[in-house]
Length: 189
Length: 189
Image (cartoon, rainbow over all chains, first blue to last red; front, side, top):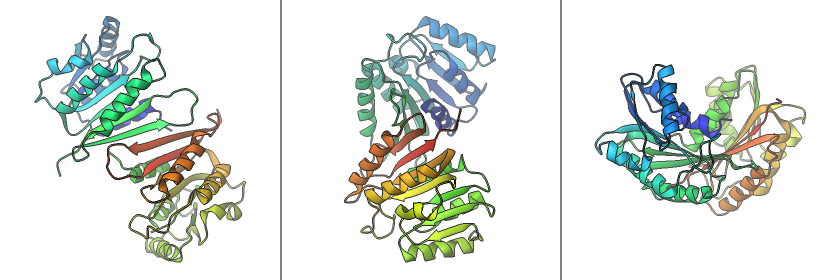
């Protein structure tokens, strides 16, 4: 069965076409940024954020190695500030977030619920109809449960006339596998 | 975003090939039985169960109208008795259940947690490695919550060395949309 990461890519692929504008809220090792850059192609646009200089450098190198750097705008700042970078009337077709810690990275560097919710709200304001905000949420670290509960409470309160919010998760694992949350802005009927 | 019913079909399609043996635990209006019969083809085998005579008649007519009756064995008995019909050493590649009530049907005719769990246990005993038992669980009726909780508790306790159990559900809807549960028997490594 697909894990949350693989399923997050499927959910993004289903709605993205070449030329679209998308967002990577947590560039990290750059793999998701590259995935998005290849999906939207050279006519598309990817906004990618990460607070850490190392992440930005890695992501840039990975993109250049794959000839996919030209369509990506990298920002070394918090995703909570994405509203200061992307105009409110600039429609985003898809957004990807890996929340919690970076798997394989420093587990003391974690995302926090306040900046996470600020970022998600800013994405939803800009999300195109039929677009998706897809979140892979790692929560097996101190503070992880609080962030998970805050994000789920926010999503569960979204008006169903405008958004669909769905959760996918494994339920029989001893460790805490990441949870997948997908928020879709409903297309006009 | 796919609803639980559409996603249940995707999860079955991903593991079923022509010639496979599959099971429909709740024939109902016959749509899932037909879907399974078309997936496995004339060389395959579908076991389908329903307590109600009307369901069996409808399903039979639907299958015949689509020229897909020859590969289906219809049983007018409870899915709890599937262990009496299918040999323990007969590997099932996929199973579909719609639990709760039949949408559009009589809401007083519901599945119950005891027979549901008996049926799921009998399926898992016969499930081929890499095979999936996919359950769409309607629970917005009296007794529905108890059945849901019993099924989820059972799935959450499955040993992760042998099974993966994942849940998919919408979380921002006022009504109670069906929950999707998928149990996969892990292929030998």
